[in-house]
Length: 293
Ligand SMILES: Cc1cc2nc3c(=O)[nH]c(=O)nc-3n(C[C@H](O)[C@H](O)[C@H](O)COP(=O)(O)OP(=O)(O)OC[C@H]3O[C@@H](n4cnc5c(N)ncnc54)[C@H](O)[C@@H]3O)c2cc1C
Image (cartoon, rainbow, N blue to C red; front, side):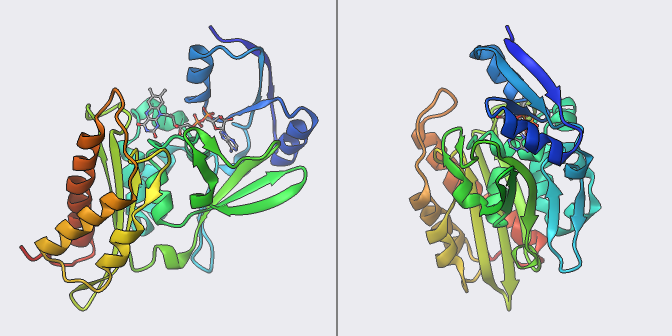
């Protein structure tokens, strides 16, 4: 049962910000694919909804002159999957978009909703961590920018202040240029399933060695995370089986996996070791590097 205590639709961002400031108890709805499910399962007392679906200014994907990629918060996963700029620049984000839900969900679900929902299983999140994405937020008080790694506070909890709207997600050129990447989702079913583990990897190769490796994990802890110890170890290493195995072992040191009905802690840790290596092999292949058995 839905208990919707009111529904308003903003036509512009300025209008949405004002309407939220006037009635901070209003809850934003974008695609509605998370919030409506939540409202059905845990009936909220007379939840008033403010729809931002019509804000065309938040539906754009662009590459600025300085190379910064800008994705509006209302960009859908279908848009991401079909966007040539992203296919060329950030293929791992496209992998993540394609792995997400089914066609109907991808048509409705927004990138902003995926991030603001605060789930560690959000398919876009580990890749946005790897890309050092910066979130642009706006409220009646003004604007603020926050790195995505500081935005996630705990399970389902993000640093969204009262009256704030996520407007854009920015990716700086130095965080994608020269990198190849890959997102690997492991779930019990091939489609329409939430990740048991999500691994996003980016790498740069120079003179037959790793110049830089970045590893982001989803569902390996209460929030998405980066495997900083493994990343530091990988720098300058040859691409041998031993190095891959050691990177994967060190990736485990950053995780806080737990047992849930989907998988045990031990199984998730096994997945971290195995899938980090598999994802890195694909990223390396995309970078034109050679894996030495
Ligand atoms: C059948 C099904 C399958 C799914 N499969 C997957 C999957 O495979 N992978 C995955 O990651 N997710 C999956 N999901 C979850 C969901 O589709 C995504 O998390 C989606 O991206 C949420 O976006 P939305 O626009 O629908 O968000 P909404 O439901 O509209 O909002 C989600 C939350 O974010 C807030 N919010 C939304 N936009 C903003 C904004 N711009 N600023 C501030 N707050 C905002 C809302 O207030 C709400 O709290 C699935 C859901 C369903 C129903």
